[in-house]
Length: 377
Image (tube, rainbow, N blue to C red):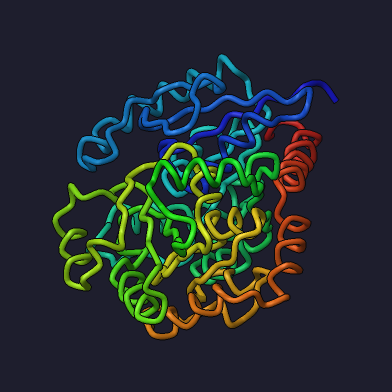
């Protein structure tokens, strides 16, 4: 088969699990596969020099402006498809999948879905409208709908997404980058002024209701009563003290001296090396969180809520808690601090199951299978 051209359409490339996977797919391609990226909004956290990016000119933070820009962007995307003549168009997340409908008559179409559950209708009516449109189109438009978790597939198919098009491809972690390194651990802890005897918990997530920061902070406060040397690192979009509500949540739990707010962090492998346990206390929406995969493949214990496919992770059940239950999450943190021998087998299994190479091979098998069918008739 001749070389394949893949055009990815995504809302943006901010720091996030789906965005990380898109970047990794586009920059670790096999010979004979060329990746191109069209972004609705030119917002790139990752190394854009390694990507072929076209900006479609949306401003997604202003929904009315984004809607007004939709006709022009559809024309721009139509022209881009005419120039590139991609074999596969892959729409990422709901807005990328929706915009990808432009390509359904000219290339094989793939949708990538990376979440379970929705915010309330009034919180984001446009997202609900797009979701209903995608469900209605799903039996004729996409050649495949890729979910990153079994729970995500079940949720969407119950909402009307075509089951015959669905498949699950697990997220994958670049094991060459996410691995323990004692020198990097010491250097990063020194930068953060963390002593050797401090027990460091890392919460790597954006500041968003989905991540349930009150639950995480309350759980950490309870955990710290028994582990006074514990410190909490908050890393991600909005995780800085410019947010008065975040400052207030920390102060209300008397954690000012225990919490470091780092904001967006570019070098996540080094920050993971500095940590002892990874915390994620999400309340809804997670499918297969990349933060937990990165932790386990690096050999770091986790404490997390049972959301999405988290229970599929190869970790001891004591490390998991129900959502919105800070006492249970504090107990999970306490267990993660133990030297239970099951952790070592969990790390080995995670590296075997969730390596990036396997994820890329699965996507490339899908691309080749669809390309062999030829262009849509």
